[in-house]
Length: 354
Image (cartoon, rainbow, N blue to C red; front, side, top):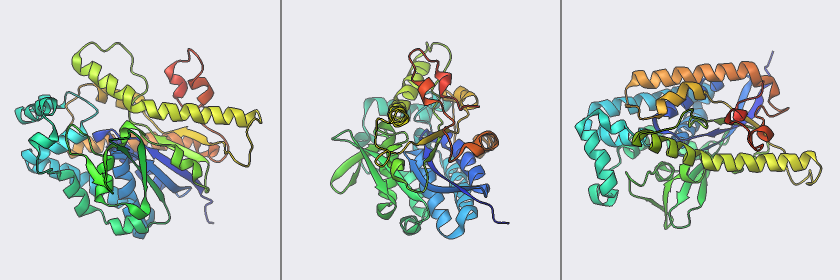
């Protein structure tokens, strides 16, 4: 008997190496025959996962997408360990949201200090980017542009206007993906059509609004890897910077969730025309308690064993989420947005409803 599939949109956060958690969550969702991924919005590492998934999906469906994602993360690990001089930029990108990575070795420490006192236009005038080389070699962008089964929305930040720009399947190249993952302390801004772009996480991490127009589904499943809540007061310079980064890179997501809650409330009160507005169903596939300890000053690396640990955490989180919330898809949100933004509400109001 043919399984009736439920369509969803995915919103994938950026977060450096923690994107391997997203890899695990995606692998579990792709393995579930009851789920149909119709669209993905992502920035930075989330954009990487989205594009790699679409590349594999175009010809190989879910199995092809899972294989391509695995090949990507294994390639990152292999490239990161092969040459210490190439490893430093990769480590810098993968650990950009978690200061403290530079303590691993003197080479990394030098690179970290260089970004504080010089720009990439000074210390990297040739704009060497091993991440772009890896992506250009591994991803077939013709397949990504031809993929009609999954709509992609890749976010990047316009340097001059400070606004988000969303790139879609038909225009995507390696440059567009690098724009979405361009950390300005490490890489020169990416020029596209005369405009310059930095990391999309600054203006949408991830952007939800492009998913409102996906007609196939109202369900948006957020794969969140930057914890909203972190107990305790940070006191060291590393801990303070890490927490500031988490707050900044969650700010736009919270603003969009607040807007979604406002529209949903007005629709429930019949104060907005139903024919013009849709009530989106919001879900959050996160494992904050498992990921939070990894975000404060931890010396992450490109070791495959570490990626495998994050992968397993993502698989387990997605498995648990599906067991608890699959039936809600198409029917109701599993995040209580009203409670999240109620005055004085604790941050754990953002946790899924049970």
